[in-house]
Length: 171
Image (tube, rainbow, N blue to C red; front, top):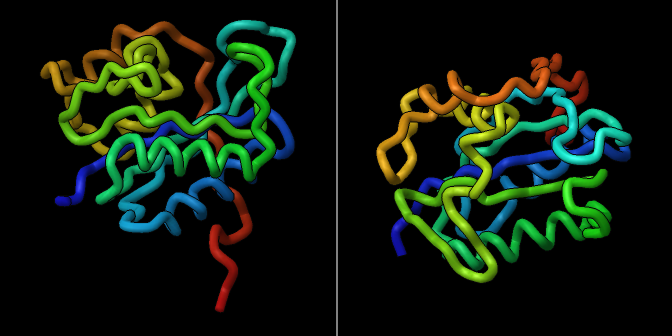
């Protein structure tokens, strides 16, 4: 199978969110048949849904993978579980949320997976990290991410400073 570009959204608002995302990126880089092309900066944003929870930290990762979309989804869910993800409340607090946002030029609508992600166009905390990774990226239907970002509701997005510790241990 040929490699496909896949973009994964990262989110956390519990248990040191920036460290959760950094750990997830390290795990993404170690996936079989997959190469980490780039990771975006991290951003803080107000939560979508219940407001009585901490702000989120979000980012995105660009992967080049030979995994199928469902194989990749299984890997993402395994990483979430390893980070203690519990699915208790929709849009509620979470240690780690990994969403398959884009997979090549594919449009997928199945019981388990929707690609492009259904809310991608309405989330500045998804669009901005994607634009940081690939400013010219378009959706499979031809819409430009940059145009979507200009029309996107403001969620008080704030770019965060990079973590001071290395993503991978030295050696």
